[in-house]
Image 1: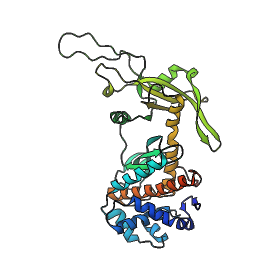
Image 2 (image 1 turned 45 degrees about the vertical axis):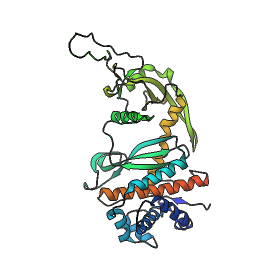
Image 3 (image 1 turned 120 degrees about the vertical axis):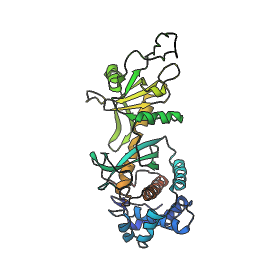
Image 4 (image 1 turned 60 degrees about the vertical axis):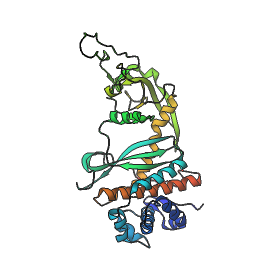
Length: 366
């Protein structure tokens, strides 16, 4: 297989041309749910424009760079054409899940700075790309991920306001999770026992409650002390093994919605990263993985998010994730779907070469 070089702003024209047949086949498979053949052709052209090296990936400059560029046709395909992106993403999800063989699904978010207020989902909120509160869209993605590769499968324009509701939703679906939370999140220690007040003989029997107020996760970890901290490595980095110091405790997150009929809160894992040079932990996670889960497995899954951070950098700088200039919800999701297909094509190419990181570009931070 010919090597495809990916530079800072995309794939070299000669390399992309050498992969043209493979790209046409890949795009045809992804866009197969589209009824009209002209829509499928424009889909391949749009994905090719996203992949082709160039600083801006909005429609006008992409059309100018493509030998068969059709600005009006691409505009129609993304902004006005009523094709449904759901079956397209479903096909992509089935293929990429099979190729990546994921260890887990990562739910993450990324901010897209916006100057105006009329694009869908724009609000004055914290934007990680800028490191401050500003006008931006926040995209939430579900990503299939293993230590070898990762790929976004689904996008939405909102973030759950309450991380507790997010965890409860995962539990309702019987999904295992490792979710990063804040140190101020409250919980009871694992050995805490609820106590039912004495029944007065009238009305419903009183519900059992924990006699002590819940502590923050930070307080629980500090109370356990440094002597329970262990050094754990999770993968090989460019400069050697990546490792840090972690502590794992069994706790009962304080959420009334998850109490059983006897008032007992479910027992969960609290994982905290506490580097030797820090006076307190720097990151916290809650997990519903089984009680016999090894600390190394908790750490490995908590740190799997690094691949998605790499993806976001590539999606933005190389593939134009944040270059959509339209103001319609439908157009934004058509663009997101096409960007995801472009990224999936690169991921599939890397996996076929047997070296998932060999052609990753060196991009700026997301």
